[in-house]
Image (cartoon, rainbow, N blue to C red; front, side, top):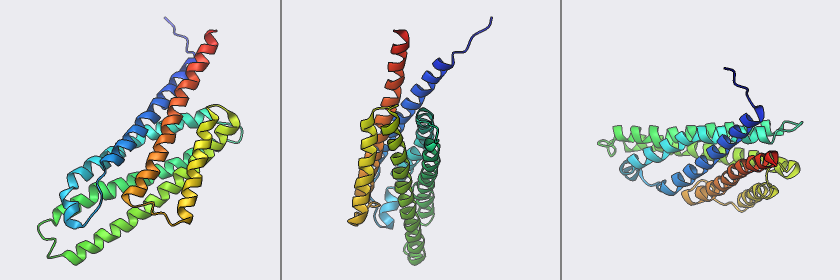
Length: 228
């Protein structure tokens, strides 16, 4: 018995899977930011180490869903200039920094402080130096993440507005995020403290969510047109 493969049907299923992956990734990112505890001194970090491990492990776990979702969005918005591929490369770069930040803040730092939890006061100067260096690296990674995602979303948004493959308002929403981030940078808004970072992530997660839903709906509408 031979089965014929319908390429259009395969594309539809692929876009649906990618859309659901974006939705899952956006909800996970939002949940992680709501659960993410505020920072503090060394003793406070030791006390919340279990929660840090959970939230950052979830963050790392969400990355493949987001990456696969953006792969589908890239394919959907592919044009003769292949600019969506550039956006995907930038997104991949940004997600890699998220993984590094998750490993440093959620896994390596709690493990390191746990090893010295009984001797923190004895080696306090050394421990503080290492913790401060970790925070400095994490802050740099946060900025790379913000710039990478805003740049990629801007490219996706411009393609969306021009190509009309998914609703244009999603493209305008992406441009709005970029404008708000630029205004924040000009006004010295603190992007890397817990509240500032939450605002940025919630906006990005919203754009990812709407893109995922639109990716699914665009193919549902296409299927209906084929039936008619």
